[in-house]
Length: 95
Image 1 (cartoon, rainbow, N blue to C red):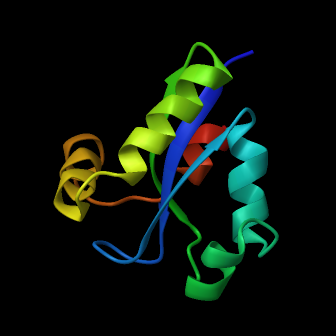
Image 2: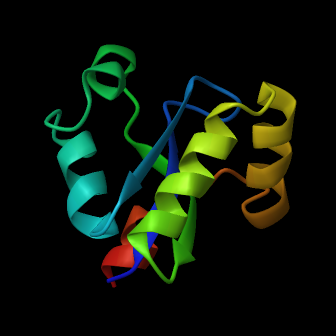
């Protein structure tokens, strides 16, 4: 089974949350409904701005751990590269 690494935010260039999951749509829906992480609920992080698929959940977990150690600017650059307008990608993954 594969996995996903994703980034949630509350606004362009706002607070960032990096997570990992096997079911991206369900996990993002949980965050949006306030049933995801305590951190996302506390800061109102409901906008999915980045997601990358991995062949295995183990690979996704390793990538998530690495990304969490990154400087903030590196994370912002990654988001801007794939999603320069900081669009909410939830509808695209749910289509």
